Amino acid sequence: MQKFLPNFTHYFVVICLVLMARHTDCTIFFQPTQAATQEPTNVVENPLQSPKTSTLTDIPTVAWNVDWAVTRVRPGYPLLEEVAHFSVHSASVESGAYHHHPQISFFQNRFFANWSNHPSGEDGPGQKVIGAKSDDGMNWKPIGTVFEPCDEIKVSTANGRSLIASPFIEVDNRLFAVAIVNDGVGYGTFQTPVTGQPLSETKTEEFGKRIRRARGYLLREIVDGGTLEPVFWMGNKKPVPVKGFPELPRSTHLSASVLEKLKRKQQDPITQSPWDFDSPHSKIAARDGSLLSEPTTQLSEDGLMIRYQRDMGGSQKLYVQFSDDNGESWTRADRTEIPDAPSKSVFGRLPDGQFFLIGNQVVSKRGTRRDPLSIGLSKNGTIFDRAFAIRWRTPKFQVASQQSEPDGRGRGFQYPSYVIAKDALWVIYSVNKESIDISRIDLDELERE
Image (tube, rainbow, N blue to C red; front, side):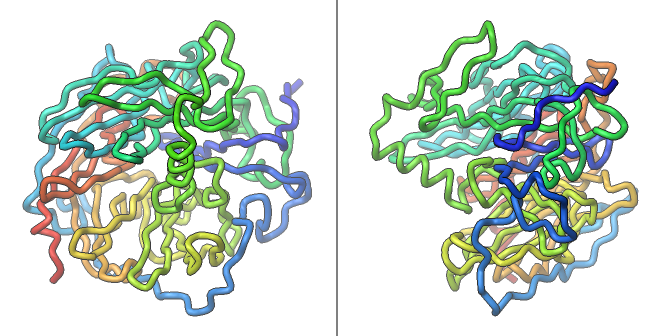
């Protein structure tokens, strides 16, 4: 008899949808409501829609006016010339098979990087966050474990508590490393967020989507060029620790002013984590009912917020939303013609005012290609008329799978984050989810035409 876990509709949860067997990193964070227990409709209204829908009627046109065609002999887009690649962390059995979700910051004239790490596979119990630092962005030194495991190490398909590296937060000239804590609580289906159905304790053919319950944020200040201060829970959340693991304190040592600024950074659509389960900006269903995740947002010249998101339904296209009130309300999300592998993309802005979109803006028949890593350029944030390949031709795996079950790793240059420093755009990303590399792009090469 199939064993089920209790209904979870009064908790924050995360779905890890296995769109393809080798890419299982897509997540949605949401807070279920009473609507989650009702029968699904053709268009998902709640709980996955932003609380306030914008009445904006003058919707900008979104276009990807760039020809591309990936083959074995060319990356589909012109290769950037003034770009150099450096290793942040090289794959090894000793350091663990899984390294992913890289984040980067440039603080007090030094680079810092954090990423998720597990011995055998993606987001398994006992996953921790490790980091490195660099004076020049090219030569990196490890700073060790930034956030220790909060559970026993188990295979990635097991239930339990794991940590995911989240973007750094800088306030009042202070730098904080961040990790999201969540519990794997069972398996469901693609429609679990809508129906609120019971969960299977184990993965089956019918219940194949990992369900995670979000617990909160862990923060840690970085001082004196790399010294790590004690770990603490952000805000009032202080979940009960897993048996045998230490109880961590709340953020009572910080001033009310610093706490408020940290909170604002986490809530701002532009600086928030792409996996921010406390924010309505991560609970999105598109106009056509597609479930979306991993938002990335920028502000246009006329004050309009533009947000792109990954489609969990396999369209291999990005979706877009707009807000004219600083994110208080958003238009319904609509599908664009911007190609997407699918994978996580990041939307940013250059010093000369241009917008850029970095990700895997390609489409393949199997929907698993995360190669090349590309950058698209736009003058207004919606019309992209230039694109380049940052890196392509993914190498073979360096570390063999360390577990008999699927480990969630997949080939590609993927999950980018960026920082602008030293007259360059620095893009950090994982390679095959087992190594962390960074690419330096001269700003001159990206200048407006």
